Image 1 (spheres, rainbow, N blue to C red):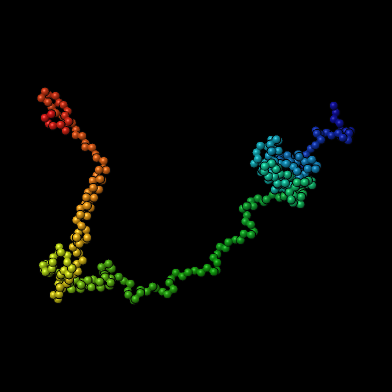
Image 2 (image 1 turned 120 degrees about the horizontal axis):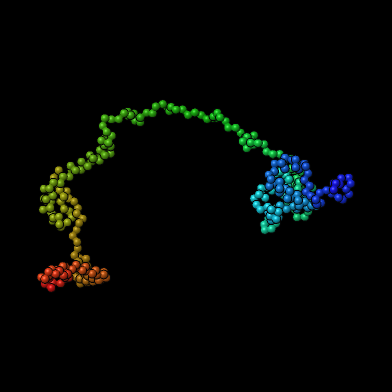
Length: 316
């Protein structure tokens, strides 16, 4: 069967399968924005263009629930491809989706947007018609070149920086009080300080003024009541001038029970109470059992050996 030429076909006949199709102009396919797309982004653009029906540009879906029925299983791939299409000006978002079940709406930029209810505020005013034509790829190695706003740092030092002088301003350092900086012949630890010297002289003078010899102490004890008495005004010695030195003794004898106002009956009663308390404490303490003595081995007259308790008498 020979094919029928287009001139002989009727007005309503067509040589393609189906009536509906996706109209993708050549200007879109040849643009830098479309050619820089990844394969998932190009496939997603065809899925969105498939939904266009002459009066719904602005209500096209790109959700994971809708695309899962058409073989899209990765939400991450969908998100990255959708971001590339929006950045290159091929799609425009008219409604921002939100949870729990509100999907986003989009419009194709090579068609005029349709005025539909439900758009977000400013979606119609900000629609960029043919925005893909003005997209340009970024220059190569753009991140390596510095921007013009960055100032170059100066290599030379600032003129305000002053160099400090290495030598002291007033010359060499001088020793205080005009003393020479050279050390003395003796060691500094062997030389006493002036305060220590003065205190030593005063102590020596006090020792010379008061001399306590054994003979002087013995004579003072004989003249007085004695060391055991501990009376006040006891003689402690004599000075070089022969004058006696009297030292006040504050140790006094302990008072008796009668002088302290305590009777003998009260004293004996206190002793009995203390003894009863000590006996009560001893009774509270548990008595430890005496350790058992080990059995002794005894040899009998018949030549046999037997064990005998050590607590029994020896002739048992």
